[in-house]
Image (cartoon, rainbow, N blue to C red; front, side):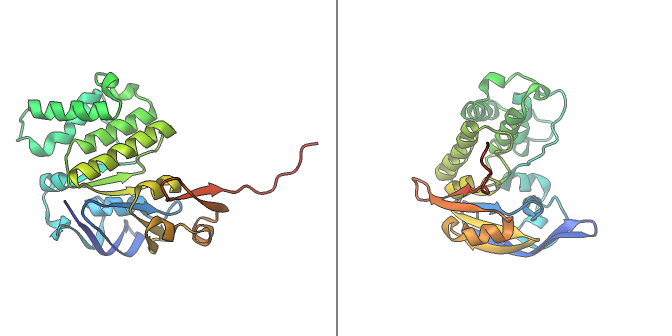
Length: 263
């Protein structure tokens, strides 16, 4: 169980500030969905929590300042699946996912049978077993995305940070992936922070939503409070209708402009 706290976070790249004064708290075992239009700073928030971009303010996990942790210790606390991963050349899916066990092996030590079992279980749950011996270069975009998530999952961390995890996935594999993350959250008490473009999926899986725009927080709370027609019109310039899904969560349906009649 791991609680994440972000306080007064300002982050950016070189002389360009992307986020300014962002604060939020993610309770242990809960799921925070980070939403917002393109360029709002969603990915930068994830990277700042990981310490991958320069920032001021404080990020802590269970009261421990992440900035003061060593690389290996941080990797035992925070699992990360990037949106655009840099995949090493020449590795198979199994070898790549095994890299997620590195924080638990000694220097120059080989992986244990326990590590291999953990990898096999995750590959099966992500429908990757048949691709276990295939090179990363031979995977489709969606298959690569699932391999990246598999590597993050086998780290067995208390916090899982997912940057657009459903990118390149068809609706079935997107649902299967998010179902698995949700199942692990319930089984292990994993705390999840994810960015998602699909607002309906974000509402279905997240306990709370954080809406970023222009580098700041504009709304935070349960999905039904954050996702309103007025809010989406203001921050996404979108015409939408809010419906209620069978599970009670809001479903965001785009509304097209009136089209001319074909003659």
